Length: 480
Image (cartoon, rainbow, N blue to C red):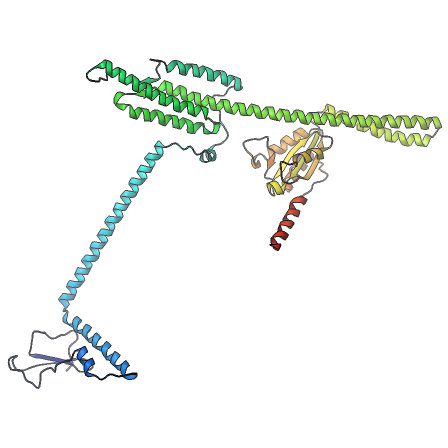
């Protein structure tokens, strides 16, 4: 008969005989007692895998494959026997054990994660604390944050700053003298029970602390650059804080008034250096303006002399034709003479009118890229001379001209063009740099609106040298 599903015989019950009929386990209950087993119903002894292999002859080919299959079947039977012996209670116990082990591992992982999170928070706290005690001194990082310089103590010129700095330095020297108020300390400290020895030790340490503070402040003043002012002040604050921490047992600290004076010294030094730089820049611009004016005057004078010579030549020629009675020749030369006189009057007008000149719109895509224009004005009689000067050895390529517009008030048109494109300046710190991120079409529209009579405008720059260089570079790369 078929064995019920999930039923396994009790291995301790010898009255139960079971065997495998090839499809399922079959069992019968022996009617005899274990002491008197029936030979006919006894389970035949099962040979082990090793005995089976020894009993079977050595086979080759298909026979060998059959042996391997029998060996695999024997292994599976052994596994079935092992599982068959494990009852439901044992399986439940094993499952509970595995569940407990998994929960234990999960608790350990959660605990490790919590420990890691606590360590991360502790490290973040330590980093924040260290950042409070460290002053950023890398100039690249400082320059990324600096904007337009703001004067802390606006004065008229560098001379005024120099006078104020001298007054501050006199105040510093007065405060660092004995009992000058530069540093505060305890007056009740004792050494070996002696207040006198205690005062001496406190005074000595106070001098040492003040010397260290002043050395740091002096170094900051000597190495001052206007854009490093905030960093220098922060660093001096940290020095004062450090001295107060080191001298807490003796109440030694840099006094607030003295620290305030030294901070003011840093601010005045930065203001002074910035004002000196501005004055030098203005002087450079003034020298450049004077050179340009001299060039304009020399150019006007040369043109005036040339026209005067032409006028004199025409007048002499007219006198000779009049002596000959050549009325037609006289009339023809008289027209040319009037043209020369008109040119002389125009030159004189240019010499008298400082606002007259040419507004130019130029670009240099090889040097500054596409969409960058320089908008300025020149009083030169020949404006291309100025354009050629701008494209000298200081830039890789010459400038291309988009427009040259003459106006009696070129200064006003230039100023209004700059105001219109103020938000598109390349250099927003130095307004004397006349480069703008503007397309030629935008410049043409603005210049037309301001002039009202713009004659010619070149949209696409020629950039001859730059484009030839690109072609040459391509050919060289293809040969390589």
